Each structure stands twice: as structure tokens, then as C-alpha cells.
Length: 380
Image 1 (cartoon, helix red, strand yellow):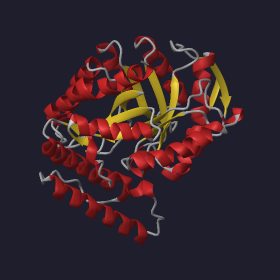
Image 2: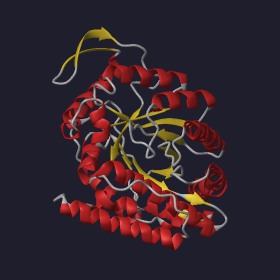
Image 3: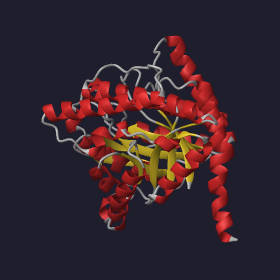
Image 4: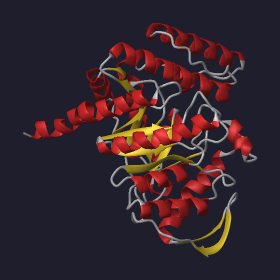
């Protein structure tokens, strides 16, 4: 049972001054999270997605955070593996160095990125990336374990070379994969990787995804294993604002989720730029529903099959925006659905720093202790 925070460095105001402020605020939030008993800080990696995510160099952010903390896990969620963006040798070197300097606190997720905007920045077509990602995904753990490599692949060619340093965790940190659709959950499970489920759809959907993932993990084959530390671990996204004032939490949380959805839609499907209208909770919920309907219509018009993964960001996780008791009830449902880790998402565009700090404190003082005490009580 883990409680974590994932960061996009999302922002409505993209001025230099605010961009700098957001990064310093994230550090302040992360330091409080360590104090409050959270387990891991995860950082995404996105390039060229204005407003949606300015976390383009997570290796730098996480290294700085590792130096400012002593206990909390340091999570790449995830490193994007197109070779021109992150060559496998450089990824292995950075992960190993970070693991040494953090004293073995690294969690290492891998993926490809989700938009042509990002892929095109490095000269790729998004639709052609998966074989390159797979080649690097299998290669990097070998480098971390062996300390040397010789590889003549289709997309990556490396003459025999020693690669330094080796990570503190032997043979390498725990490995994860970003998952949204059923096929990615099957891939993660069949390869023995932890699954970072980055969707808003809620406990019922997590239960469905958990069943797919566990089935694939249970029937995995040795030849499909990525790395040398298989783990069955499912982390579930949980957007949250937790305040004593429930109505304020819902109003602020839904406004942040709307910004998240609209900024995501802008880069992923060509929708309008995001809004930060300060509507009441019911109006924000109605706006999310309208945008969901517009997205379904657009996808249908483009002859794209509409699946749950296209629209789940529009679902409203009502109990995650509320009081500590609301949060406890919602997190309980996620754990009951099969989640091993809660990936709290607080830092959505338009949610003020002071609200995030209060949320972290409320979860640390009331939510996490509730669940930490539960096993002990059950054992008595």
C-alpha cells in the first residue's frame, strides 16, 4: 500500500516568472510530502506540450529532489524511450547515477510519449515508435545489470563498451510501464512490469484494468520478461483536492480537472485551448460533460473508434474532491479495486499552491494514517 504524488508541471500562466514559480512550488510540495509520510514522488516526461506539461527534464528535477530529501522514493513516470530523445546508454547512466546518489530510492518507468507533437520534435512518427521503444526497454536493464553492452539491433547499434556507473539497487531499480488501454496493461503484465495506470475513470474501471493486468502477469513467459525484477504492482491515478471545506474542494478540483482535460485535448486531439473559468462545482461538471460529448463526436467524425481511454479523463472522481473522510472512502474503493499504489494528482492548472499544500497536509495527517493503522488493527 503506497501513497504517491505525480507531477506534470502543469500551468495556466506560461510566463517565465510563473514557470519558475511552479517548479519551486513543486519542490516545496514534495518536501512536505516526505514529511507527511508519502512514499514516492513521480515525474512525467513531456516535450513541447505548452500548459499541459512543462516537466521536460525529469532527470534534473528528480536529481535535485533526491538531494533535498532523505526517504521518499524518486520515480520516473515515465522516461520516454525514442532513441533520439533518450538513447538507452544515456538512460542507463542517468538512472544508475540517480540511484546511487538517492541511496537506492529510484523507481524506473518506461514509455513512448503520447502525441505526434512530441514524437515529431525528435523526427519521428508516433505510429512508428513502438518497436523502437520495445528495443530500448529490453536493452536498458541489461546495461544496468551487466555494466557493459554490445548490441546490433534494428534501431540501436552499440559497439562493445563498458557502461558506468552501476545502480545501487542490484541488479536495477524496480521497473514500470505507463498504461491506459487494455493492450498496454497486457504488455506490462506479460513483461513482469509494474503498471502506472494514468486515467481518471475511477474504481470500477481500475477493477477491470486490474483483472486484465493480473491475468497477463500470472501467465507471463520467461522470454517476455523485461529486466530481472518482476513485480505485480498496479498504481492508480487519483486526482484530489482535500480540504475541510468540501464545496471549495469540489469547485477548485473540478476546475483543475477541466483545465487538465482541455489542455490534454488541445495537444492530443486538436481541441480548443483550456479555460480557467471559476465556475461553481455543478457548472464545472456540466462543462466536463459537454467536452466529453464534443470529443466523442469529433472522434466519430474522424472515423476513430471511440474507446474508454479516449474519454475517461472527463469522468468526475467526486469523492476525491472533498473532505479527508471523502478521500478515505474514495481511496478505499481504489484499494478494493486492486490498486497497490495511489498516484495522487494535485498539481492541475488553476489549483493554487496553498490549496495543494493543505491537501498534502490533510492526506498526510488524516488519510495515510487511517490506512497505515488498518493492517495493525486487523492483526490484533
